[in-house]
Image (cartoon, rainbow, N blue to C red; front, side, top):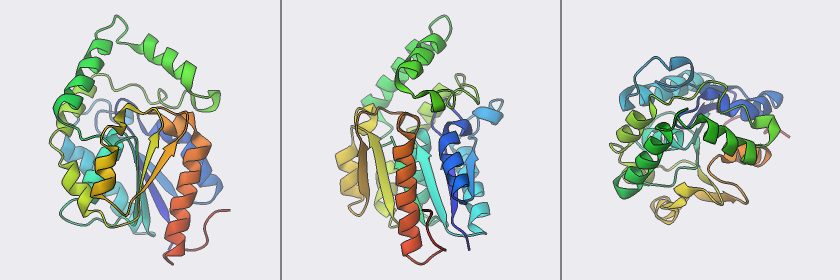
Length: 247
């Protein structure tokens, strides 16, 4: 049985955000799948619903689990969805989980403020794309700069997706997760607001804070994030589930 990795992207972007991670995994012979959630990437024409988003994750995980233990990895909205999925009432076939840039409960004033800011940016003449590109140019290294936009920006889906997240009981889900779990945050990530709570809810989890990095930790410091993948893979390997870890 061979370790499998399933990657779930964040809001507005698509599976292309994982290009650096997919390249590293392929180089080390680790099979990996990066999904497109409804309303994003190749599925931009679809409506976003929590049911279909969680179904997409479940389908990818169960397909991968036929070939070996599954390391599930999610970023931002994808991180929240993977937490909700892994910590659901019915335990899915997930061996370990990396939840990046998502230690914030998606409800209340924080979610309202996020939606307000997103709406203001979306109301700009070019729907904020000029501003988005300038931010990426200033913060993302050249080798990963185009990855977030390569699958298109899901601007029409954004607010529906944000509103849907409020229905998730993330606190209960995190408490249910008993498998190896890593929270990965950029030092300056705005979604670190409930980091202490998440650590209390999952005392066995490891927290990795990446210095000089904001929300887009996978693209800003891809080599560091790939090192987290290496750590998670080595942890699974040490449990005796699969063959030797990548060197």
